[in-house]
Structure formats: C-alpha cells, structure tokens
Length: 288
Image (tube, rainbow, N blue to C red; front, side, top):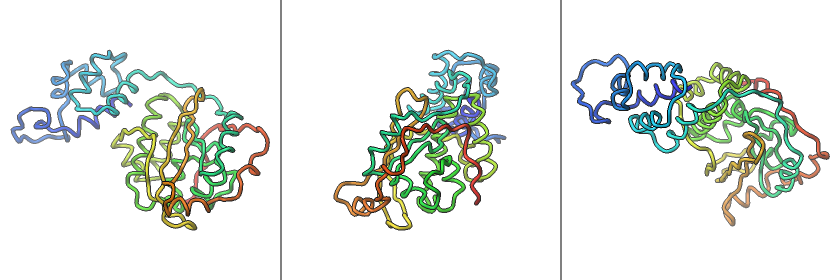
C-alpha cells in the first residue's frame, strides 16, 4: 500500500510544480519520473523504486519526511504516509460490541446514531439512525456501510449526487486499510467493492486521503424530505477502531423540525437486555 500511495502522489506532480525544467519531452507516464522524485527527496533511484514496489523494509522518519516534502503532501497525507510505512500486520478476531456501548446508543434516542465496526460494519443503530439511513432494511440488519453506500440504490438516493460522500467513504476505508495491513476481512471487502462498483474502483485507484471526523451534508429522505445534517464520528475507547456516529441538525431549523419525526418510536423497545453483537466478516452482497 505504501508503493501505491507513492505512485499516485508522484503522478500528480509536474516538473514545473517542483522547480524542475520541462523541455517538453514525451513522458510515458503522468507526473514526475521516479529518478526525479528520488533526487528531490535525496535518496537513490534504486531505493525509491524499491519503496514503490513495497520492498523497502523499514523506512526511517527522516526519509519519510524527505518524501513528504518532495511530494508536496498536506498534513493528512503526511500522517497517512507515516501510518503506511510503520503499520504492523493485523490479526483478525471476532468483533464484539461492548454492552456499555449498546446502552450508550440506547440513551441517544433523540438523535439518529449508530456504531460502526473496524471494517465499517453497522454493529448497531438506534431507531432514528435506522429510519434515517436505511428504513427499507430490517431493523436487525447489520450491513456493511461501504457496501450499502455503493451498491444499494435507496441508500445512494438518500445522498443524491454527492461526490464528496463517495470520496469520503473511500478515503475512510483507505485510512483504515493503512492502519490494518494484512487484514484479510478488509482486503476481501475492498476487492469485492472494486469488482462490484466501477465508481469505487476509480476512487480507490486515486488513493484519496482525508480524515472523516465530521461532515455537513444534504440528505434527500423519502419521508422527511430535504435535510441538512451534521454527523460526528467519535472513536470508542479501547475498541480497536469502533466509532459512534451521531447525526443532528441546527437547532430551530426546518431540518431539525423534520428530523424530529424520523424514527420517533422510542429506541428502548428495540434493545433486548445486554446481548453482545459479534461480527465475523463483512455483510453478504446487496442486490443492485
């Protein structure tokens, strides 16, 4: 994955971008040549080539910083570069939703909320979260969110023609994959999405990098109509990548009034004791 990231960022640079003279000669590939980037970073072309082939071994922080400067990376991309270079092989174990986090979700009955697992599976959602995002699915469904967004027509219609949402979903998976090299479940999910969605495959190849902590988006809900909502993705402590996602509207707005009627049935009745959800792998395919 390090090599893939380096290639995409090298391809977006032109000689003029980095102070090199461009004599107009034909270039077989877009962007800088490997030897040009190596020279800018102060490393040998052979060593840089091995990095792009994921054969560079341990890479020092000083080399990573030199590459980041040469590639003109922003802060998020720089962090991602270090993550890719230093990540350790990940071993999978069944994913569990802690009872305290299920109870936390239950208390959030006035706003839509859900908990995403380490492979962006929906481990649980409250009544309002389900009614906002996927009322056409059974409440007990535990879909994979990336599959749902790219392969489910009704969920996609909820976001309209949102290029930002598509890119952010892929960027989020890219960051997760960077932290979890060797994760077989995640690799299978990504491979399946690349085969099933041309849009996902195109975006994945571009290697977008962007922190997904909060967003304000327009939703086109089949019952509540047009909604402007903000979501917050909050990491759950000690759970290895699980996140609480909460949706809300600006107080006093038309969206807040409309959102109040989405999934208004109390969520408490849907939680039966302190049962534990276990996710072994990503969800079965959603028919398009």
